[in-house]
Length: 124
Image 1 (cartoon, rainbow, N blue to C red):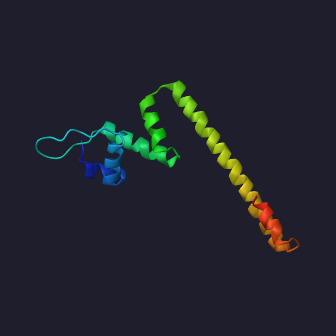
Image 2 (image 1 turned 90 degrees about the vertical axis):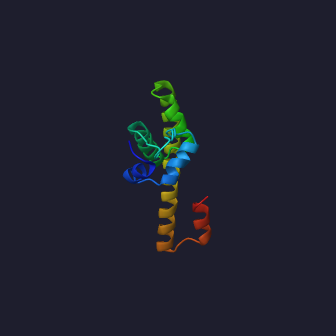
């Protein structure tokens, strides 16, 4: 059991971030005892670790909330997984097109054989 300050330090997370997740309903706020501070257990720490990792992977807080509610419902998890994979693949495709356009612009600039209008068209 740890205080919010101890937990934040251990997880390299801001205290206000933990409070924000409480307000958003992602984690439950422990009951404040008559004397002393609220104490956070290992289950809450694990949820915070999960939230941080999910955010790093690009999940929104709304998606993270859904994941926490699914609690091992494989069908729902698979649906979200496939949806997220589709989004990631679309981003990869867009990034590859951007990479090609930048390479094309670089070749045009180096060869100096094309007009600036080609550069504008390459980005369309």
